[in-house]
Image (cartoon, rainbow, N blue to C red; front, side, top):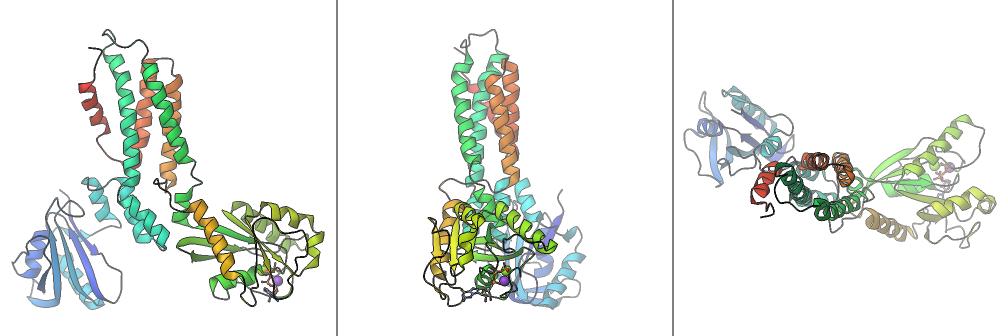
Length: 443
Ligand SMILES: Nc1nc2c(ncn2[C@@H]2O[C@H](COP(=O)(O)OP(=O)(O)OP(=O)(O)O)[C@@H](O)[C@H]2O)c(=O)[nH]1
Ligand SMILES: [K+]
Ligand SMILES: [Mg+2]
């Protein structure tokens, strides 16, 4: 039998209210001890004096919520005790809980792990809970909430069901080889397998938007020395994160700042100015800048509008073509454009006087939104999902060309297992039995 666990469910430290969660078979015993023998009725918030059962000393004036298995977060008996969020109160209550036989402190994620174990949620939903707790921006919150609601898990479960139905044909062929089956089951199943492969491909080919939304969209600021890249970074970060000077080649290392850009988590990198140089350290800086640009999801080229030398630099013209956005800086100095001229996506700003900055932010924001924004369909949010889907897809493709029915069946079973691993939902194998029982075997 599972042990009863407890933990602080709210944030650490001093607060108005702290919530302590208890889950497991001894929950009622603990509540009885703390409340002096009166159990609150389930799902009703009850104000109660909490006492140390060993000496009847008062701990706090609290609020208790009791849930009875299986109608609880974990599926076990659960209690949530609201206390005043002072350190001494929390400590005292923990000491008392620790003294209760059979109780121990929960491990990280253990309540949710139990919820999964008791069929309260599948693995994608459990991951959604973690993402929801970690969500720092609005878009992250929305994506996580959709996963908690089971949208992603439902999609994978549908696919598992489809594979199961296809597999049923092959199983029938194997088990009832001498019965009156359609001559070529491939005619029936192969279009279905191909359709499923197309759906998975489409889902995989998502620009990794869900993963980007979880981890942050990487934006690299690149450009010639003294264009104002570090100045721009500081403006975005609203602090002096990078050193700014009028000396070309000031920035060497890649410097990252994390920002919330219109609800999206972004990581902006300031990089060394791009130029040929004999200085070994600056050379390494330039190499890192190019690498950061290549790795970025969105590459922003910053150019000093008033610098006539840009016109002479072929490399800047090339960067203009590949950059997602060109930011012409220092409009306070000039209103003409010197150098290789305006590429399609450009914006003119002055970090110094702030003009054009909101337009630039809107521009970057819509780039992020269009590439990594939430879509109608739920998206992959973890490499774990991606690799399992790739495996499922490979097995489905193999089933299409399998030389024998038994081999095709094995490929389909492996595809099913790969998809099933993502949700960890049980029932697909059992579903096979159900479908199989009702299966029309040519009669
Ligand atoms: N007039 C004017 N000067 C600016 C503007 N933005 C930046 N500067 C100045 O341009 C100089 C270079 O700025 P940085 O931000 O260090 O340029 P950088 O691109 O990071 O330069 P490196 O790190 O050397 O590649 C500094 O003296 C800034 O104060 C602007 O909008 N207008
Ligand atoms: K500089
Ligand atoms: Mg710099």
